[in-house]
Image (tube, rainbow over all chains, first blue to last red; front, side):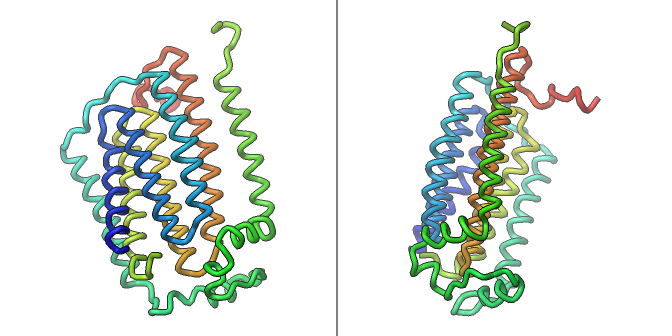
Length: 185
Length: 103
């Protein structure tokens, strides 16, 4: 299982580098498909089955098909590979520094024992409106989709409805931006 | 199932994907690739949200990640519509050329 996680993480990282460094736009898009698929596998391993399905359907399905469709429609020309000058070196150093910093902080700066985080107590104490009580393993026991839906349609109902409004605005905006004007026709 | 020992690696992967996406936004000139790099950064945030949610025994991380996915979908729709509108004007797809608002 550890080997599987390592392979999934390595593939996600390598294909993310491919997104940035591919000269051809279509190769960037295909690398991004690999990245989001690997991230969805991580979601599944992190016990987020609903997000796994959403990630596959929305990202690997809808969003990436939209990207590939636009690339096929516009056919952008290949870009020169970024030169490996001092600025690229600074960028690579920044990427490595942030990654190592976060890793080291996560490894040493946060205390967690063999029984996991003490997150339940922290969440209940810091949030007085934390009325949806889970046991420590309720997320695993009740079936993950059920607990997500229970929270999404009770505590977070208003943000959920606002996202539907956001999607409507985005759809109207896209139609407005791509409409054919009289002088252009 | 991922054990708690993998948590630093997950956060490290999240930070790596975020910074590589930020670097891509800065160095690439094609607006479509810039949008893809923004997707990469949003996905990195989702990994961190879901990892924290998993190890804090809470579903809030997943709900926030769900909201982030919705926002990312809306962002892609508007961004690609803008790219199409720019292309229809006969402009070259190069973010260095599309800078007249800064002048």
